[in-house]
Length: 311
Image (cartoon, rainbow, N blue to C red):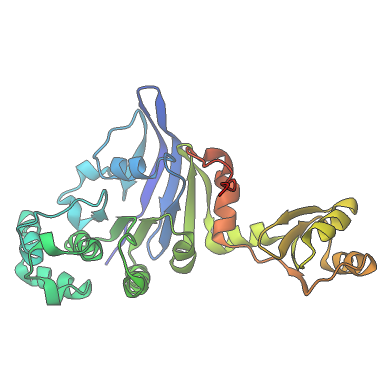
């Protein structure tokens, strides 16, 4: 099966005075799970809607193998999508919902039964969708996205409503789709899941891509020249290291992240100043660290600093 590439180039869109997209550009390649992350209002959902021809843009293109979605013959056979979490008719069984979609795509009932098995809904396929849990509805939406056996799959927040077993299953499904040559784009707010299942990540902020790289490269760049210090005397350690020219931030109850000094120098300074510590080691960043650093200025809604409420 040939897997076309999805290319998003220079998307710009305004809703009145709100700039939803401001030059969004990235590529989703075959055989790769691409995570699409960013704060609320960053333009992720709008981008996905533009790719599917649901929204028009002021400038730019979103092309599947060189063609827009609306120019494809039988689009669901090219791109399968779970976007906006559209619910099936509550009085219709899960299988009947998929049969209805399959008929519109010229597909046979056999394909419906295949995707039902693939997403693990066989035991409840003949139950009315109105009785489905959120996780079951997510699986039904994913089954619908896979009906046309598309080479490109786009899923918007597919982990919503999934229990731990469902999350593990979802990871495996996404990796399997990519392993079979499909181009997979997944938006999610769960950074730990994106780090575990994605090969590549696009970080959106204020309507554009502020990072577009492999997960490994982003984490390596964020980890570089940083040292983790575990100490029960954070205030004393911070003063000593800051006086020596380091930049210090508290990243845990007893953990400091230090930049500007090598680990050997940090250990020597703490020892000389009688600051107790149990560990000084190279800092290993997470995708969440990368995300927070890259999107700090792009967060639309930020809670006030927590204060203790008097009793």
